[in-house]
Length: 119
Length: 162
Length: 92
Image 1 (cartoon, each protein chain N blue to C red):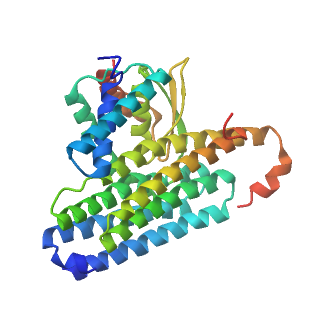
Image 2: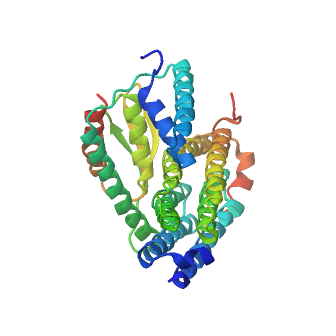
Image 3: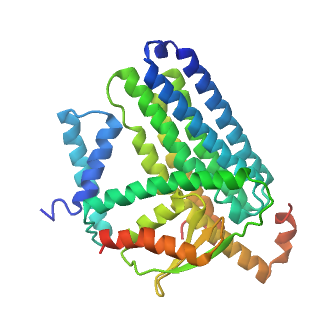
């Protein structure tokens, strides 16, 4: 942490706020993964971490390295863009897969059900 | 010009990504990035995607601002649901929305918007009937969600991608 | 001032670690395959954020590249897993 000693007050405070805020939002999303009851509710939970959580931590990183290097460091934008454009694809396929599996399960194939449906 | 740079927007953003990744504006990297962007554009042309003509830069920025505000707001809403007491019976459900939007890029943008706002999830779009199915975490009124998606996002996307 | 920053970084790392634990619990517990995939999706995003935080702690931008790689590979594996659940094979 010796590099952070020469950081002035404002960037340090901003970095700290965005960092803790982003981490807290991500934790709330993951807690939702734990507490929500059905799959279709749980699938909403990670989007908290992938939108605001990622954005806040990436912004914190941008502020920190920009202040440290005294020049704009913007490449964390790539992570925000990447995460925001890729999460919909994954979740969309996953929900469709869940729908197909639910449907095929209610139609038949009872032998696999016993193992899968453990609460 | 169209033979050399078939997708100018894609090539330009590839160049932008290259420069961002290398954190530089030196002439050498601009040259290298331009080569990458050109090759990327040709590679995309081989896939023959439909052409997109996004218009109205102002509308794009207004939509982006609206989406950012909505993301923050629905983040708070979902956090409240996760921490909230179980007193209120929440209903989870699918909502079917008839869309007028047919442009594939507009639909892709709508998918990103709907899934990035926590609490709503894009499930399926039926191309023949134009009916979009979304999944909503806190479903109170189906008609309200149809209004939100159609009035808030689809109208603006129709403006951008005609 | 740097003391406060150090504490906030530690706090963020603990919070993200707890988030990873929640996601790991969902992977282990299930109950169904799609729940595990959602847990995995959440796990790699949390791991990527933890690596970014580690980059802030050490002050090197090298960790950014590692985070980008985690994000890319995590996305590809989530899609592959989801596709497998959907069809029973990844590439048709």
